[in-house]
Image 1 (cartoon, rainbow, N blue to C red):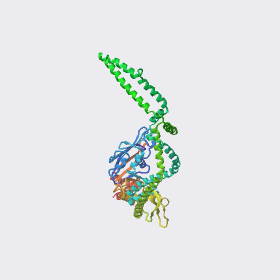
Image 2: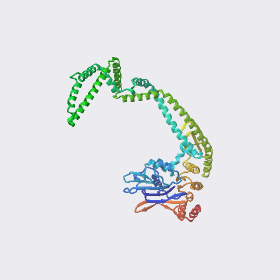
Image 3: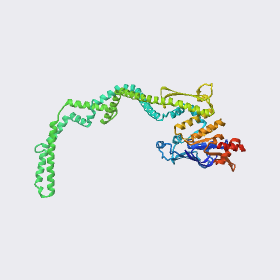
Image 4: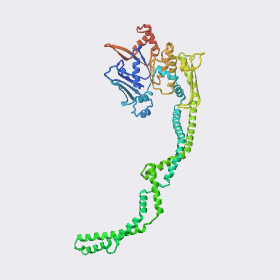
Length: 550
């Protein structure tokens, strides 16, 4: 419920602070007194776009703040979705700066207007002539029927299944559209894949292969050089081995004369061992050299293939070729498995459709059960509201289409008078009739779902007398389970309120100001008497006002 409202520097309001109670609250005032200003300020809190012209003093900012008690509204999930701190006493504030910039806050956290609108839909419903037009829309008519049918949970399940179905259906269509393109590319991709697979890239060491090629391609020169090196080391008298032995013998004679000589002898000895090892390695390499033109040709061919692949795919590393091969393998596999994927998705879609059909059938059955109840209640209430001949014909029929709320088409027809024909509400109901129908629907809905606080803005336009008394009784009954406001010009409705506020204008220093006053019992008698007979209150008007209040 709306607990309090604070408005500062807005339109004709300097500053306004008002606390509200639960139950049925009446707001009255002369035409032009500023009731629309009050609604305008509240609308800003609920997410309406701000306008710089709404600031009273252009040098100061405009502030509108509302406090809502939301303990019974089950809104923790919505607060989590909006990433907001939850508090049962939720404060919403709008600010319009002199620059024209607008800011919004929920519990002191800055928010976007979208977030404000998302929350405000659960807080208060301002019923205006514009909202009455919702009655003519299929979506709203379905909401009313589904509320009576108790379809909330099954509609949530249906909506979830429908999202999955549409997503899969889109993917299936993409697969079908891409199938022809993939098939066109398949042969070329398969050719490239075979080309890359034939050379066994995973077990190919390019550096080793190039080394083998260099050896085989230069075997004669290598053999000659190895032989020459071996001769230099092992030749008698002039070979490195004999020369080093001579050096070793000379140093052995003086190695005991000092540490330096001993270390030098050890180094030459080590050098001799290393030289013998080198000679052994030279002999092994020379002996293992072989001339194999066929192997040389095979290696050369493999290197040529690799270089051609490098050039063809514009890469320079074996790892890059392997990556390309893996990508091609994936494309080929996808193409080869495309039909299986299509069949798999078709089967999944078929299963989802069966489930959607089952849920839609359940929704349809509950709607057909609820429709007679809705029609009966509507016609009864409208009879009390001076429309005894009002008749409704409501039918839902199952289609092959998957709508957001089931598979039904809806006919919501109305006949106001005997002898006339059933037609849509838009064509057959007047403005006054639409207001009464909307009031009837709101009162019925309040029996089935937890509605937010509701503010009826002159819903009584065009009615008077006993009908207005009935409308007031309906709103009074609604206020037993929710907070109800009525902005009215009719004394019969005003008298039924639990709390009564009056909007009035006052001139101060040649400036007009709008104010809001809570009326006590005596003030209410005077206000209702004035609504009955004008500013010059007669004793009979006073008596009539007291009678209405009692």
